[in-house]
Structure formats: C-alpha cells, structure tokens
Image (tube, rainbow, N blue to C red):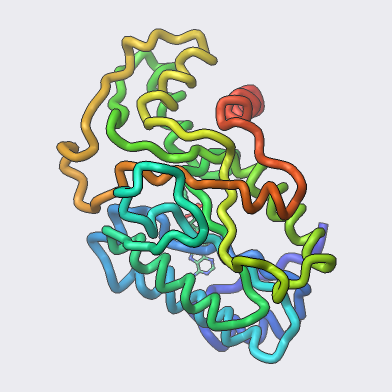
Amino acid sequence: MGRQLLCDLSDARRTVSVIREYLPDVVVHAQALSDVERCERNPHLAQAMNVTALSHVVQALEGLPTLLIALSSDYVFDGSKLAPYEEADEPHPISVYGRTKWQGEQVTLSRSQSLIVRTSTLFGLGRVNFCDHIVTQLANGKTLDAFDDQVTSPTYTEDLASAIQALIEVLPTCELSGLSSRIIHIANAGACRRLDFAYQIADELACSRTQIRAVSMVHSGLVAQRPRYSALATTYIAHLIGRGLRPWQDALKEYLSQRH
Ligand SMILES: NC(=O)c1ccc[n+]([C@@H]2O[C@H](COP(=O)([O-])OP(=O)(O)OC[C@H]3O[C@@H](n4cnc5c(N)ncnc54)[C@H](OP(=O)(O)O)[C@@H]3O)[C@@H](O)[C@H]2O)c1
C-alpha cells in the first residue's frame, strides 16, 4: 500500500503542499458533501465542499501533468428525459447538491488534463448507505419505506473503482485529446426503482417483501428535489475499457455476501 497523507481540502495551502509533496500521477477526487438534504439546507456548505474544495485541488495541480478524475453525479440531471442519460445530455440540476456538482464539473473541466466520472446510487463497504439501511430494517423485522417513483442505476463501489482503474490503465494509449468526451458515465448495468432495489435485497436475504412499503418520493416531504429518472447510459465506458459493468443485481448479490 502507498503512503497515506491526510489533507483537509478546505485548506487551499495545505492542499497545495500535500499535492506538491506527493506529486501524484493520478488524483481521483471522491471528496464531497453527498447528503442531498444537507446540501439543500446548507447551500454555503455545499458550495464549499462540492466546488471550492475541488477548486483547491485544481489550483494545486496547476502546471503538473497529473491526471485528475473527479466524481460527479446523476443528480446533475432533472430526470425529465425518461431514458438513460448520455454524457452529451445537457445537465439541468434541480437541487443544491446537483447544482454544486455541476459547478464542480465545470471547475474540473477548466483544466485540460482532467476527466469527470458521473456515477449513481452507490452501495459498498465502508460508509452506511441506502442498501445497508434496508438490510438492517429487514433483519430487525421492521417495515421500511422505498420510493416507487424514482429510477436510478445502483452502482457497487468495487465495480466503480475497478472501472476507474481500468480507465486509468487504457488512458496512455487513449490520450485525453483523443477522447470524444471528458465526461464519462460509470454505473452498473440496468436501472430500477428504489422499491425494486429494496425488493431485490429482500429476495436475496430470503426476507418478506411485505416488510417494504411503496411510497412516493414526490410526497415524501424531502426538502431537496430529486430527479425521478436518472439512469446513466454506459456505452462510452464500455467502449473505452473494452467491457461493460455487470448488472446491478449481480453486484448487489456479491455485496450482500461480502458484508456478512
Ligand atoms: N453516494 C452516492 O450515492 C453517490 C451517487 C452519485 C455520485 N456520488 C459522488 O461520489 C463521490 C463520493 O460520494 P460518497 O457518497 O461516497 O461520499 P462520502 O461517503 O460522504 O465520502 C466523502 C469523502 O469526502 C471526505 N471529505 C469530506 N470533507 C473533506 C475535506 N474537507 N477534506 C478532505 N476530505 C473530505 C470524507 O472524509 P471523512 O470520511 O473524513 O468524512 C469522505 O471520505 C462524490 O463525488 C459524490 O458526489 C455519490
């Protein structure tokens, strides 16, 4: 394992000194405030964490040949397309989170040696996520609510990381200037409603689907609006790395077997 350095990205000077000390070949920027409700309630914090911190990284990389890959989100879209979003589709965010992620994209793309990776509805080891919440509720015999009017592309963090790794490996033969887009969608194949995602977990764990209550996102009382449809088209990443990501159901099955 490589050397580990801690860096508060809200501190511009510290960010410069860490990057200049380490001189990385590649920076994968995964820092963000991804709590959509918290962003809506605190737009200044969202701006600081999703835009300003990223701009510190971009400033710190000035003059360096480092490849910057910054993660972004399906929430840059408004959800009105109702078909998988392509990289070329125009963002139209409907939340503070989505708007600040889009601003972050623009900060990233202002630097030539940089890529955006948009992904969606992450589950994986580490931080408690939507999937873990469902598992806990089902295991405790409790009922839970899941939206029947929001469709996304659930994505396993292991698969996202391995696709990013594969992308980094093919890039020397595929110079950034030769890319048709510096925005790349990476998600597990397929899309589903949050409700279907919860049903799939129940099925995998041999729990009853009756513990899951279908509710409407639109009437849920959430402060931030979410796109009702934000599946991501992933033919471009498949073309770049020579393979598509597996279906989200297969990735979920593996995750559920690993988290026990
Ligand atoms: N979660 C999703 O479903 C989802 C969907 C689409 C796109 N994305 C994007 O994927 C990326 C990762 O999201 P996530 O949900 O995995 O986020 P997360 O779990 O909240 O992780 C964010 C990371 O940022 C770090 N961080 C926060 N403030 C920092 C600072 N000032 N300096 C240095 N590090 C800082 C956090 O460190 P600590 O651990 O120390 O707090 C944490 O490790 C983001 O770009 C997000 O927009 C996420």
